[in-house]
Amino acid sequence: MSWQISASTATVQRLNTELLKFFYARVKQTQDAEDLASTTWLGAGRNFKHLSSLRHFLFSVAYIVLADHRRKAGRRPITEPADFNALPAVFVELDSLLDRLTTRADQKAHAERAAALLPEAYRDVVLLALDGRKNGEIALTLQLNGNTVRSRLSRGLALLRPLLDVDG
Figure: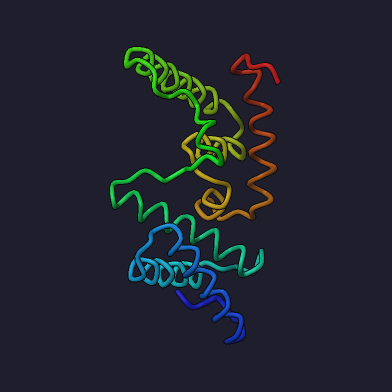
């Protein structure tokens, strides 16, 4: 595949600096940050279709690269609440927690079965969203415009709600 990005050297340097700061703030090691930035540039260079700004697309790829890095490292993505005093009450008894997890798994399985009944255009987008993928990842996977993914997801979820008997 050929390189799809055409930008000035100053733009590339500015974006690379932003990428390095982004990754360093999340992985705290310079070498890892540089490796992740390089991987991001390679992924973006192969797939950039000029459907959005270079910066937007670059950071969409960067989030995917970071998620892959964390998955390979065996860590879950860090999600820090703004206020540590406002943490949800997740420290409950083990039985209660297991019940909730089972319920969520059942709910997800039910939603996936219902999503299989949707028209094809919406089905793929909704199933990937139920799998936890972000709109940017879905757009890359299905080779669709980000706005198309957003509208199909919105319409697909609207069609899915009656199938799940969920109030709007």
